[in-house]
Length: 231
Image (cartoon, rainbow, N blue to C red; front, side, top):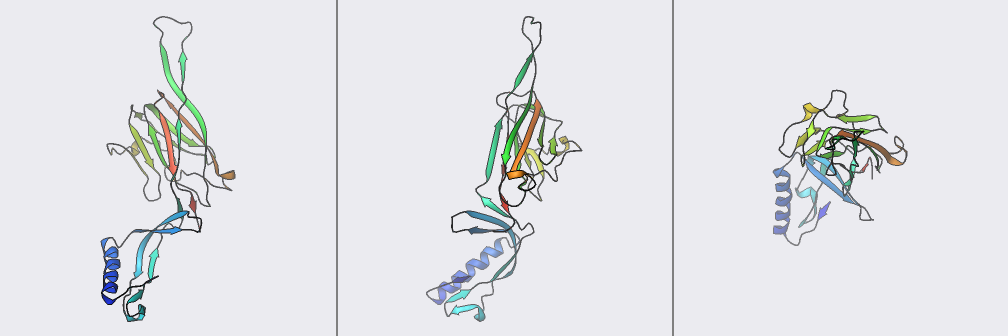
């Protein structure tokens, strides 16, 4: 790309600006693209080469043509803004019969199914947020036959975040406590994803949420980027 300047000092200032930006964090960055419909996309990149500001790269005595090379280790564009879906869990309370007084309520359990639609041309690895109270929550994508099953009590108002972003894969709460050990050995932490067509017809993913001791304050949310292998 080219930058037009009005004088030599402006050209030097522009060169220093680009060099300083690359110097601050030469390893990582975000490449952004906006199409003719004002839809925005992002790609995580690593600076590889470029920023030759010598005479051969001059458009004219005061302007420079910059060539930058980036490497994208995950070459899949994500569409902005991030999509999200929150399920407030319906609960059912079991009452023992015959009724004796005082009335005793037993464990409140959930088993709720919801549909999440992922667009794009590449699978998405969501961020799952579980808000307590809930005992031993399990989130299953029935479409892909993958699950996240916990042996853990999420206390009231506690928020557990499962970040399934490639290269991340963390499970923490607001106190930054590492909860990955609370996940069952047969859970699909490494592969859990929202599928797109044709793996999931129309991008529809059937999500099953299960757990015990839930209340009306319990919720499970997913946020994700619709991703494209090319734009």
